[in-house]
Image 1 (cartoon, each protein chain N blue to C red):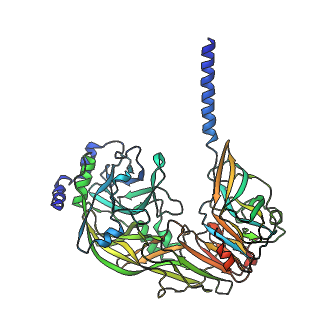
Image 2 (cartoon, helix red, strand yellow):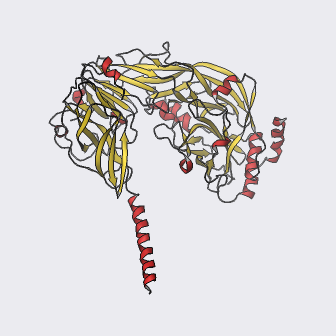
Image 3 (cartoon, helix red, strand yellow):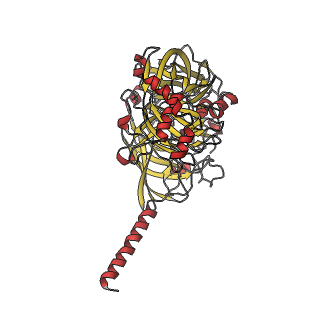
Amino acid sequence: MRYRRILLGTVTVAAVGGVGLAVHPGPATGASPGLPVLATGTITFPLGSDTGQVLAFADPNQVTLKRTASGDTLDLRLVSSANAATDGSFTLTLDPAQVPTNADMPDGSINMEVIAVSGGLQQVYFFPVKLVGTGTSARFVSSANAADPATARLSFDMRGGSATNVRYAAGKWLSESGRLPSASQTERLTSADTTMPVKPSTASIAADVAADTTPAAICLLHAGDYITRKPEHFVNVYTDNNHTAIAHVTESATASHTLGVAVDFGGTWHQSGTANISNTESVSSTSRDRQKAWSYWNKVNYRKFFDSCMGRYQKPASFYDILSGDLDGRVDMLWLNVSCGVKRKGDSWDTGSARAATFGAGVDLPVVDVSAQTGFGTSENVHFTFLRKGEVVGNATDGPVHSSVVEVDKFYDTCPR
Amino acid sequence: MTTRTCVAVLGLVLGLLLAAWRVIGTNGPVLTSPGANVVTQGTARIHQGDTVTIGSMFGCLNKPGAITIDTIEPVHAVGLRVTGWGLRPNPFWKGGPPSAPNPAGIGGQITVAKARLSRLGFTTGRTIDVKCGQHGEGYELAVQVEKTTAGEAGASGWVVTYKTGDETRKFGFPLAVKLCNEKVSWSKKCNALKV
């Protein structure tokens, strides 16, 4: 019955842009002062349109989805919306009380799904958030941007561009973690055209938002089959293969990973943002001590979905295994020379921060390769122990502590005095 | 103009000055350390009475201006006391000012060095006056500590107290250290120390 109502809404909103133009010629609306900001951003309107709406939905968490059998349907209720200003800018606020109880992930994050609508087109972007601060300083930060958790700034480029969080570069996680994808892989993450004709149910909700009436419609989420045991490249650990140091990796049971969401844009699949999975059931895992440069992998499960507001997509669902022993293996040594620090025999260096971009690199789905990034806290580390005098070398001029990739080697004499 | 009016005008002017002072006072640059990761450094063969210098604390400013450092203090310190601190230009600052001589001859940023600040080129300067950039613009901060225990020593981080404008602020470096007696820092006794 509810689905039928959405379909009927199609007629009402055949030209959402036109409705919006009549009602909202001026500033953005929808942001409620005093409520935490969920995201800010801009819509680059398609040619011929100068209005747009932004719709935010909180996705069901992995526990709820696990209980949802393939073929079952869940409601996706609108939790925040905004009309873009004439310059395309918008601000989404979100009352935490409006977040459905089945949306909170075990790590406290919420997987958001934001759809922008303008000129008969739509774009979608997925991103996980966490509520930080209290009172007037409360705000939602993008937990995908762990190096500097910040409120998402979304860019919907509806003139042949893609939807992005300008504060989170998905391609970075592919390129800085040792997996070194091809240029075309990285390019696909950032520059694909991800606009599509507006879906009837999306248009219905957008029209209500444009008219400042309470949206009656909801989206329907159909859960599909799982895509299990997909390798997730976790981290490359670089030693000089020369007995300078041994290293091991630890991944904790509280780890949360931010993995790419693959969306079907009319037969062509692209990544459009990320979603979190939290590790609640697996135990911590520690790798063997190794003297060789080594690559570590996890296995994750994805799931197919059909969303009445946006079509088909594949989203991370859960961990299958962490530090999977059948996938790891030797990799070539990586030589860095940007900054260094000398270590003596017997010393140790432990990167106990998931903020290091050395973690997480990507998942290859059957439809498209997507990015991956781990952690929001300190749940993973790489531990180097020095068997002889050596150096830690980083890729940042600010020093090895500030580097997203580090290697250890014996050539401490080359570390500038 | 009556006395009451004069007082009112004077009060208004003082109020505006105070407001301006507050705005200016809270608008100074802020110490930062972009991209700093949580790192724990373990160091072997450090015994009671030894002095070591702990560096790798990179600092720069979020905008042009200058700050003055008052203190650098440990967080959750066990068995150590701070006996000094200093600054030197980041060794990887391209085009940065030259450092003081480094007679200890230890290259790169200092992790934990068994040497005093002065032998590593750290000076008693207290001012940081460079905005963060893409070429390592900034200073390496270091603390000199003495191990005061016969057991294991350590700290979970360091807090810098500094003045910017007329405001006193704090900044924390999440750089943990362990100073271990044993030949290796991954010994059972040293691992037992949680920092």
